[in-house]
Image (cartoon, rainbow, N blue to C red; front, side, top):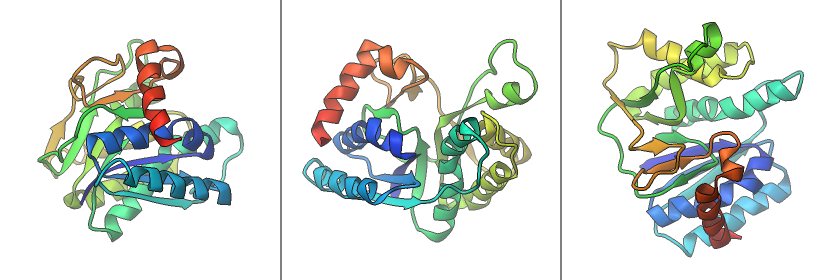
Length: 235
C-alpha cells in the first residue's frame, strides 16, 4: 500500500499534524504518522485524530511512536534529530512492511491527491544555496520534503538511515545523508525527480504539496488560512 509518511516531535504533533492529517484525508491519500518521544496523552491524541480521519475519508490512517533514535547534548542537536527521524524510522518500516512511502514534512499540506510515482526512488533535487560550501552546500542540494521509496529502495533507505546515525548531529544531516547516498547509487536505481509543480513553498495553486518553510508557516497569509481551515476539520 502506498502511504504518505511523516514523523514529528510532540510539539509539532500539536501545532501541525492535525492540518496535515485533514489535508491528506481530504486528498484521499493514505498516511502514516510517527511520533517521537510520545507521552500517553499524545498517544491518546493520535487515537482521537484517527477517529476524526474515519469521518472524512475511506483512505487509511496509521500511526506509531518510539523514543528518539540517539542521545543528544543540546537543543540544536535535538532539533536535528527530530528532523532526521523520519528517514531512520522509514528505513526500518520499509524492511518489515509491505508498504511504500512518500516521506513528507509534518508542516506541509496535501493540496490534491498524490499518485504513487512510477520509479524506485523519487527525489527533489535543487541547486545548492548561493554562497554555501562544504556541509551546507551538500545539504541544500536535496529538498527533504518529498522523498519516495518503493519496495526496491530498501537498501537505499537503510544506507540513508545508517549515514544519519553516523552523524555528526548538525543541521542538514538528513539532506547530506540523502545526497551522499544518492551520489553513490546513481547507476543502481531507477530515479524520478520532483519539481516545483509537485511541491513548493510559495503556496502556488495546482501544486500537490505546500510545505511550510521557516517563518512562512506562521506569517504567510495564504498558507496560514488554508492550514487553519484544515486544522478545524480535526480539532
